[in-house]
Image 1: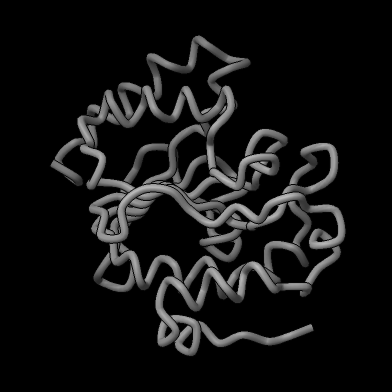
Image 2: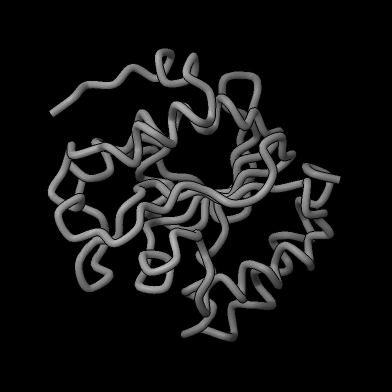
Length: 189
């Protein structure tokens, strides 16, 4: 298992990180992946959304959030008033877990340097964690309150909101999600 340093990945730039992700064999997920899912959106966004892991559609296309959850995320981004250049979307891990199960701790750890390097290069003002898995991967076990912003490293504002897939099954949470967004608009406007 290769131990990657975030600073070395950052020095390689976007293309270098993408190449490293494409060649990664640090966990068993590389054995079953069709396409690794790296990112979509701007390379200089104000907001970065961090999702959990690629699903079936994402594995087929290599594009994050391109299925039903992606449609919800697109609606959320539109509701937030973000322009095409205003956001980027990445996942905690880059390969789909079998049967869309939650990523295992060793899988999250294998991709952690990629995640942190992407964030450094994207250099957003706001990082929005989409659900609990993104929180676990990014916050090292520290719990955030839903919709309550927190400053990290004096540089980023972290905000945890519901994962767009959760809104598919709990449509009643859409109004609650919109209220979380409305109360935090000042972070990205």
